[in-house]
Image 1 (cartoon, rainbow, N blue to C red):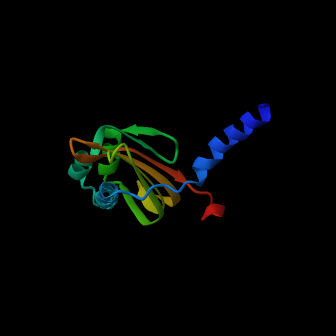
Image 2: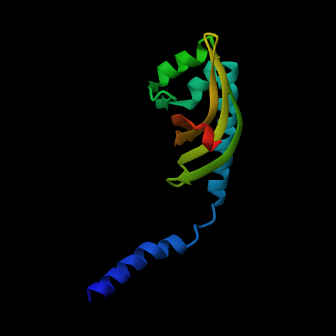
Image 3: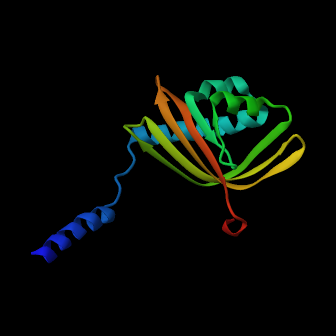
Length: 156
């Protein structure tokens, strides 16, 4: 009897893994397009230092976790973005995955990007894996979290 219970339990774990995920709904497809467009505009705004746009898209509870593991709240992130001594280029987004949750109200985007920049004349950058979380608030997408993790040379 014990072996039967174990077999049933194993089946409950394995069978869901074999069932294909349902196709994305039209609403999810629309949300995915909106989030990708927002991500692109966000990257442009960081590069051009369009602080008013960044202020509109960052949620009040926004957090950015940088490559050094520092968590920056919205105000500190915006201050870093408007610093004229900090130049940032996020290039060539690839290996992008985007998942929509909560009936089209939450999106999680991951991607591999190349970062090229200078901070007070000192170069920084390399290959990074980014995770960005978006949530719909008052019918508009807002950025909740951004985390960039440097990739080791062997992973690129």
